[in-house]
Image 1: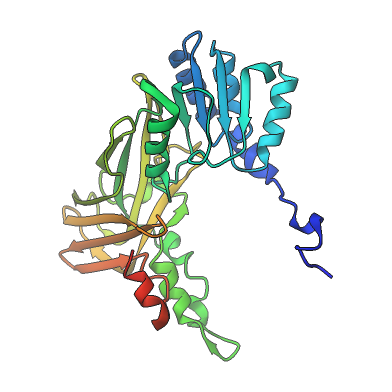
Image 2: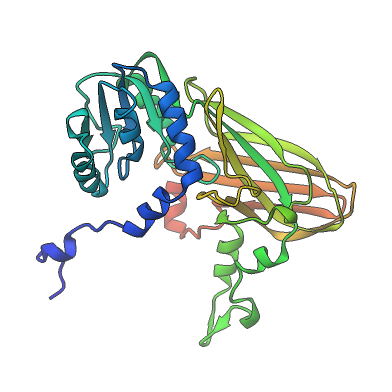
Length: 332
């Protein structure tokens, strides 16, 4: 009987080793953080890392003169990190804390915070609350945060193949096995997707539309309008979004489409109604996100208007709700 309540082997957590090996092999990203940590950590500092994974950045901090490092990680990979620290002679300098950082209680406050648990457009569920909690409870006044700031970027995309790849039931007209599957088309087109965007598919010069200073108490969510001038004629199938990290005043890291080594890739916001554009057209784009009060989930809305028409999409619309669920949704 395969009942997880009775079988501890089934219930046992597993570690996605391929995921963590992929992260550690992303040398551009790791080296950028290594430089930032080495230039920020001073002898005797206490360092806090949130989402430490294999412990790589905590190892950098410990070997850069930190008096002590607190590596906070809620997943089972922390056991591997602890063993790696022991094998590299760092066990006495790092305390591994298996917990959500918002629930962790540390013995002392830190001089430096390291965090890298971002989505491909920086924002993710609970990120703002996590950073505020860390600033209030885990850090000394005037502490350094790595990264110190992030800029969000946006550009219109003219890539038919990227758009069509989301709709792999299109050729069957969403009718298979005698059933109607058209709801799946709506869900795919009303959702952001993490994809590699070809820089040659951008229809206009990218725009930086928001900057977040992680040391400041400011809202991460936004409602922004950008205007673009198209560089060529084509069809606009959606928007591409990404971020630039300012790790320190002189160390930067970007997951822009031009960065082939980015492990984050980009976010593609598809239009349900692709729009024709000609060179020199003015394109007005509105991108907004709100945070659910109840669940802290991030809900996205992306809209555009051109001379040929308009398109409007929302990740909230992409999730079908039964009538009984609508009342709960009103609390978002």
